[in-house]
Image (cartoon, rainbow, N blue to C red):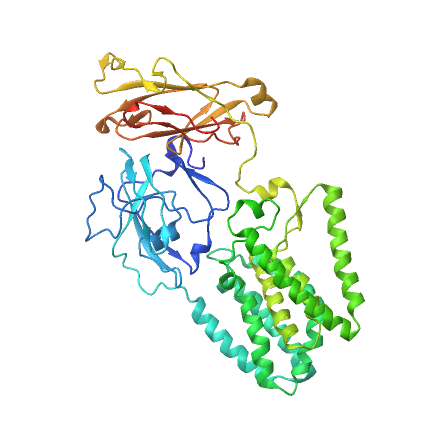
Amino acid sequence: DGCGLNAVDCLIDENATFSYRCPANTLSTILLNPRIVGTTTVVYRPLVVGGAPGPSDVVNTSLFATGTYRADSFLCAAGIHGGQISNYLGGCATIQFLASAPPHTGFLASNQNGISSVAFDSSFPIAFRFLLDNGIRNCWDLRWTILAINVILSFFFVLLFGGDFGARLTFWVLSVLGFWHIALVSNKRSDVPPISDLVGVFFPYMFLLETFWTFAFSKFLPSYDSMPLERALWNLSGFWVGTMYDAVFSSIPIDRLTADSLTTRPGTLVAVIVIALVVLLLALIQLHTAWRSGFLLQHLIFYGSIGVSIAVLTSATKLQLHVHHFAVGAALVPMAGFATQLSTILGWVALGIASDGVARWGFDSLLQTTDELRRDGALGSGTPQFVVNATFFANGTAVSTEPPVVGGVRLDGFRNVSIGWADGAVSRKSAGYSGFSLLVDDVVKLRGNLTSYTFFLAPLQAYGYDWYLDSVPHYFRVAYLTADNSSHGDYTDSATLTAGGNKWIPGDNG
């Protein structure tokens, strides 16, 4: 929808080039809600369409590095798929856009460099290939180099400063270092980090750090006064594991820990169960330590009051619980308030998780509305229903017709096709919609009050905005649209007009 009708807002001059840079670990950027490509549903992986040379590609192997990609592919993931970028080190790539008229067809799937791309056998107005030599050198992500430097410097720092003053100094220096390492190096909000936004959350976070010190770190850090080597090893191992949360825990299939996510994403339920068992084991060990130390009742009251408060708020407000990882880290810190090695590692890992959450996402509410959690997912709205035109289709088979005449000219080789859908006025208007939005081959082709769309099936050389290649299948999806064209309801599943226009295959819900 962001490219407008016929994708005119996104069309780019033929042979135009574009160079870009990708950070390391870009494969952690995936689709978290389903995206339909033709009739294929893609979710929980990067969106890469095409990439393998197809029958219609004539690839100059001295100029181009790969086959052809659909332009809505994730650029960094496509760069990894095409061998231009490293997921571990990042890198730079240059793409060259292909002609938009006629559009490119036959985006073939392939499994390359750990990424399985998606096939699309119809046409798409914008496509690109990777240039073999982009002329860009020394474009690696420096996060691992900076991490190594910070680890070495922090090791010597912690080694040198002991005593009560050294313990407090160690806590604050490492906490501040960890926050800005995340914000500026390891898990940036954007390529150019928004310093003003980061400062806006940093100072409130300082108050949270003070509570961390009071509840946990003041209990175990001073205990390493006479053991400088142990102090450095035990504190820094937990600190850097937590600080590098994005890299260490990125393979765990958990995004937003909500009730729906447990059943929709493969592996999430198992991951949650395993994590819950680990946390339960840690809790039992720490509660036993609390019992031996005489603090069991305080911990039970603390965590019990948090649980009761959340239960009351969710039932009273009808909001959904959204467990952000900064909240997970903050909740684990009080469990680490004992002078043990396990508490040391647990405390620093928990602080790192909390720091990563705040530096990357800020302080987000634990209770959110369904709309806030949905992001770009399905609304659950009703959908129109396609009505196959009986003049051109009988029992799913196209009826031969005379070539159309446009402007007194007989268009030999063309066939006129009209696709319609039911008005659904009662349900449409009651839901606040007034019109329709039509996708053809994943591109918006119509917005308005019309209940049909007429187009030509045409030869390749005669392609236009309402002329579709006869030699490939075409995919249709329709949704309700608001009066100001600003938003739409859910689209139907893809209905397919087979190659040659010989058969109409309806989608599952329309």
